[in-house]
Image (tube, rainbow, N blue to C red; front, side):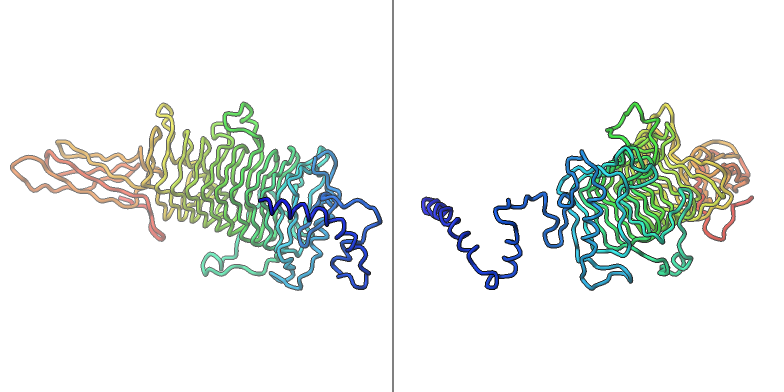
Length: 493
């Protein structure tokens, strides 16, 4: 330790001499890199960290004049930093027309930046990281804008009611439509807080591929926290989204509005996300999306809120897995190939099948847990409207506490003495007056054993009636289902 201290003291003494010797070197003999660092006016102070615009391929908005305290407006400074960063050349491309910027980084350095207009990325950029800070909308921020927008001039923004359809070849042959233009690829947002100030939304992504939004926080949006339209493979993970900051039981919950995540796009993933306040937690308007590990406790169903809304048959091929619906449920409009499994539904949260055109084709709701109030006895599956075209629907193996169990399959055993046994499945079956298949058997009790002729004499209103040719003491067991495979019609006596 003594030797180390002595060495440090010696170096301190030699530093002025070394600096003097360095400055005496002629410019022609000086290495270019060292010469560039020394091109400052005589006796000028060393540049501060806040004045550095970039370090290699890392760009700092603070160096362009952005105010990290949030006192002054920083939109133009941030846009200047982006402009310089996106002019970095590598000579490579990702998708055609998308420059590979080599992993250039926009680093907010933990600052708190007030902006009055959207930070819109120029088209044709990729391999970019935006990280580490807070963006807050000013009082003059446009109410229809988003804090950051990946929006090329040639892209057409959809209306909120529009849905995305994919080419039929995708559904039937597994071939994706590659004709749509993609303007952004491989852009990552991480560790950023987006505060929309009740004026618009957080991030808008359109006609982009392979975008990552990771470890971000979205507050005070009135339209969408995250809006994705067109394109493919936006991954949203480990994020928190809420219109208002709350941990539940908010006195203003009835007034929550906006949508936390709106995916009018295909092939995206939402993973390990919490949505703590909004009118709608997740709105799916595209196909082949997966939602997993999402906790929704936004506006409660009792106040008109929806946790996850699968919009029309245009949102086919949807998988909702291992999600926690906390006092707010799932609404499926005319579901086509939708799978809901391993979920936990708390506080009377349930699944509503909403009829728009009256068709369900391919729906699995299996192995979920439902917990609610026995006094209300809310059904775990509720029909909103009539469905005239139903095939391949499997709703079973769910467990229930304090709610009414609903299923597309059921088994009953009816004991009695006489010639008629009635098995009433109407309290449990999801669809009214619809039994596709049944099986039944009779066990005759007592002695002497006698041969009994028996048969099903009626199947209607989800009731199966079995009658025998003589009075006996017996147990009749009946199993039914409403699965209805493609090409089959309803059972008719």
